[in-house]
Image 1 (cartoon, rainbow, N blue to C red):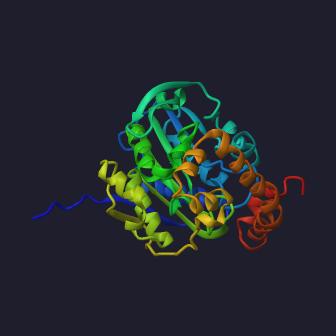
Image 2: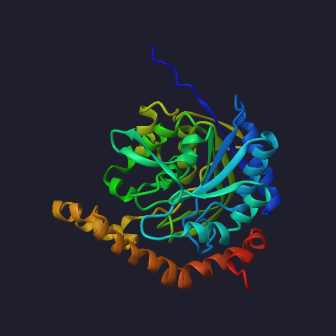
Image 3: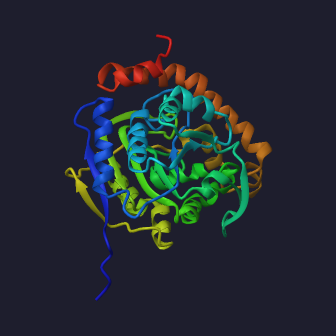
Length: 356
């Protein structure tokens, strides 16, 4: 007889009311359903949020009320722990310092006595990450943390099928991540293997997620859901199924399970689980990846693409387009639509229109 795979608990919790207070209550309930603090007594904790964009468009970044709930739960359970939070820059822009302010996350953290860290400018120490990455400079705040909690927002993605708890750790590597795009699925598994001893919990923000050409220029998708688990492989497997993906479509899940990082078998606890298929993003929806896909079979082009001097100007064009043209013409109107048509508008409107 074959071995039965152990099922890991994954909380699936419905937000009953579209308010910050209801979201915070749902997040804390989900965390406790999976016994998030079991066996923990950390002196230092790092909360990894997603701070992709300085512009506020619901579904792009971790919402401040989900971050608030995780932070409050952590501070109440471990009042003496030193808590840090942050993200790193993307390859082609410098957005983190503005994003953490514009999304209201900096104010939440500072009120609670937590310290913000821009991982791209923080002190580092060179360490061996694995056979794919080799030796990299990793921020010392991460190396010294006794616990890491990852708090992504669920989005479709133009490189991987979607991004949630495992892909969020891509943002723990402060430099040159784009060079590993040809082996991105194996690389995602490897970075999670490196941080596995410290990785204690994933909380996925599905209040307002993103579908279509994510992770930046997709459409907000209001889901009113929170998912959480201490097993990030089980968590992302459940998130994938909720979003309409089959587990076999998501290579980084297969690699992560093979590395022993968790189980793709999930025991859903909390509310009744259902699927809510997302519109999928395609590489051609992004300028950089449209060019990449068009010339992917040309070795000379691939060699150029992975060089800083070639990739970064091309990526800068894509970032400029997303920030100035796309956001002003499409992103901001969609953000205002979420504000007008959902209960989350009371929370988002001051972020979308801070001077309004």
